Length: 352
Image (cartoon, rainbow, N blue to C red; front, side, top):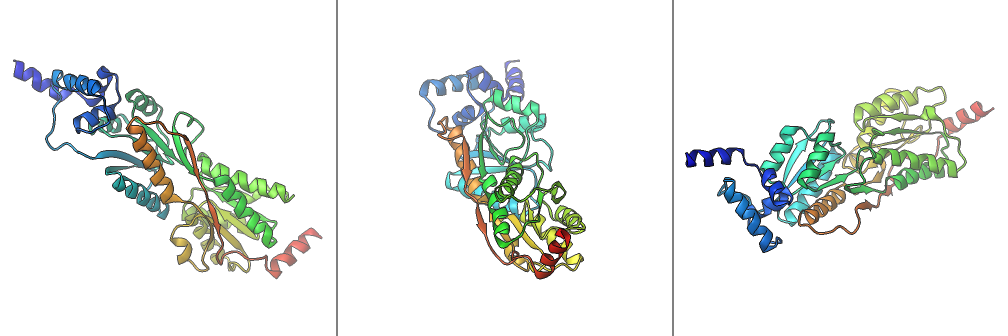
């Protein structure tokens, strides 16, 4: 009977239960199981006692490395590839492994995912432009699993460490570049405005127009999805306006490529008839013709910093700055120029 009871306990006891009984986080229990340093002897002894009393099965093949769950909305873009590259490089430098979860645009944190998370003893979660379901948010908080956000979603992010780029400055710089070339009718195709990064870029655009005393026009703004089909659809809408823009800023490079396609379908030349600016500076920028002017986002650096901060939190160390911003940079290539003669004449005719 005693053996049967122990086997039943081994099947039902979880890391989360051990952590709750010990008054510590799941990552702390995981570190005890993995024989890692950085835990007081008294706390280690208490956890070891609970593990033995509750019959928790100790697998001989348990990891010696830290484990990070990297949750991202999609892997189908060069943007995602750059983020993964940065996270993997930092994880390898720190001696950690990554587990990747793709949400396909849905909130992260189903009960099954939370159970797998705790069962494998993750050291924390890096969440990239994805939203946590309400239940997952509460459960991760209860389990004391640290979370770091890259490009946070929504407004309820104050309790988390966040990493982003200087998106407002990027939107401003892109707009000021076009204004400096002589453009005054500038379109903007955003990514999803639920993401703070896209809202900040749009705010930077409006600020630059205001400082230049150029009237804003809501018909020149479209909310897209950061992908090529969205750029083609909304770029086409802007280019079909009776008084179309002479320049368009796009919320991502892949979306900007969609604007290239829309312009090509209409016989509009870049940059002679239309200037285009993207965001991110992925490899695509130098593959297209003409090469794309864009706002460089330090994507790999953002993911590396988020990974470093998460491992710091998992060790129980304090974070000096919970709101990290890495600088963006305008990279001027061949897709922008002064408005062409035909465009200037059209503007003059419209004004008269």
